[in-house]
Image (cartoon, rainbow, N blue to C red; front, side, top):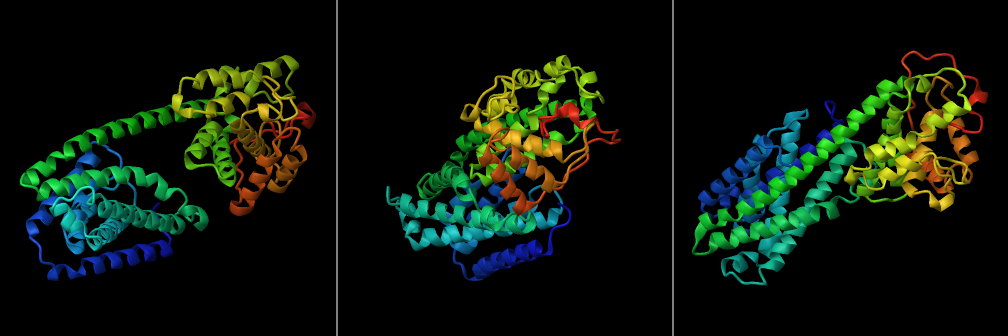
Length: 435
């Protein structure tokens, strides 16, 4: 994102000013500076190692240990060098570094304030268990809440996400990993204040680093799966030149429907994959049929109608796709039972397939193909409504109509060199349903 909206830059500047206010009392803080320096160097080193080895996320135990050990301004200072020096791949790099540094400074300062206000400093020094868990838990909750609030704000301003949805799910998704990091930070703080000293506290990081490495391996495996998905989609685009970009748009439309239905983020991501992969079975269909300009014979249509089963066979071994595999197999089923490959009726059709069916038909109608010109969006929506209850699930159609009313749609011509449209009679009875 090269061009950051002005309002997002103002927002980042305001958070940065807030971070400076948090750090302002440093000159009056009475604390040894060597723990601050040691923790700051340790955090910066962890961030550099994470970037070099492509680990996911930020190493919060060191920051939270600082919040449990140090006064709020000193604890907030621990985050500053590592955040400002951490590598950033996306531009604008300076603004992103400033944002991350300011966000962490404010979050750690709030966590430290909450921890000290609840008597956590004495509980860690004693150590007084299980009482020490109460202020530490409150500090972790405050830290997670601040990060979620600030992240939601930047999403709403920089990415122009709807305000109502910008914060949805941020706090619940981040709470569990931050809580684990908070527990490790508390263990570091207790050992630091114990007779064993800082060296023993650093040993807590070893199992955390191992778990971090395992988590990074999971993300690498997921990235490999996504790369495989991209390769399959590109192969379909090359083979069927008239539907180039169709899969990505169906994935986007499926996400819009899923969000309008109130599905959780994990399921929304799965439905995006379902939309992207719904036509992958076309790799098993002869190219001459996909690119044929004239009407299809009944035998040729039967061959093309095998592509959902081909696609299902291709993706059935990708375990993280979940219900997306059912969408690949059943996205051409119809509510009235006249679809294929199995003629399922109504709720017998998996919900994911009913979502993708609407998204697929809409993009087919609003894109130029070898056999039809693109229709205007209002005309396509009217066709979806006309076929709701027979071809499509009415609930999915209405959800998509509401989503389009909120966000709009920008149909694209998928053929680079459009050819004359095929006679409409060749696809009669299948509004917008691609081959």
